[in-house]
Length: 316
Image 1 (cartoon, rainbow, N blue to C red):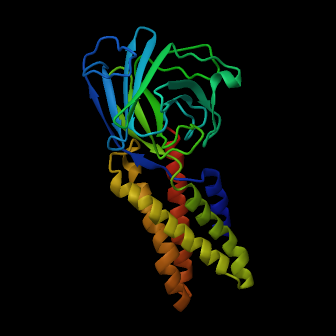
Image 2 (tube, helix red, strand yellow):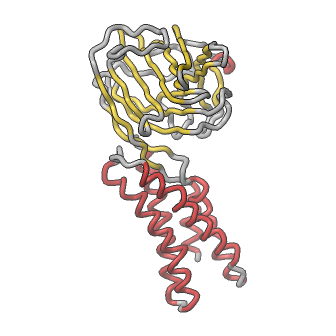
Image 3 (cartoon, rainbow, N blue to C red):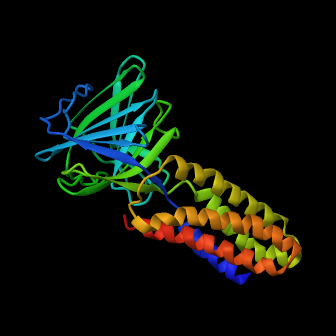
């Protein structure tokens, strides 16, 4: 079982696999957008619809300025982040919401870590570099518009390219408090000049079940050596069910082409390997010890797929 322990240690450094989030882009000729929370047809040059319309982002570059609009059906906040390092870490965020009295609040913000928290730039010693914003809620749909320079001198802002691709993250909250967990979120890659878009990955879905799988393998060498494998079996079963329960719905209901191309096969492959390793082969091993080795190697293969998916995703 030493092999299992070493693989688990390697995986803990990776921790999670990423799940594809599909979206579609549209482009049209446009004049300079007006920040009035009213989106006229063709007002923005480019737009992208994320997660089957759960979040819509529109954008246009004019000189040294970038105009954006966020649109989603919600009673809570909307957020978009530019150029995160991994998940939310170091993302240049803009978060906005509309109060019940119609007042709109939009903040230039920054995400400190992979899972937040998100702070206003001014609270971190930076500056609010939004040059203007507006927001409204109508018929359950929130619209937030804002304008900012492509480049600032603020340490808590990331440059937005005039041309070419930029990675974005987005979130829709069911509550007005931006510190609350989002009800929907995702990742995308947009082209600021052409309007082209690509699928990207969100690194949080398999975080906990993947860690449980790694711990199950690591503990196996200790627990089974003392003929106390219940904890190992529990962790293995829990991780397999979690992987299937969180991963399969994402794969079924979020189809799309992976930004990593052929690497997209890693996600379903890892799920199948994990299910086989934690389920069928473990059951067979109870009847015939020859299957125990197959159970181990299938689990190791699942971990390798999970870790490889993360490493390849870091190149986005």
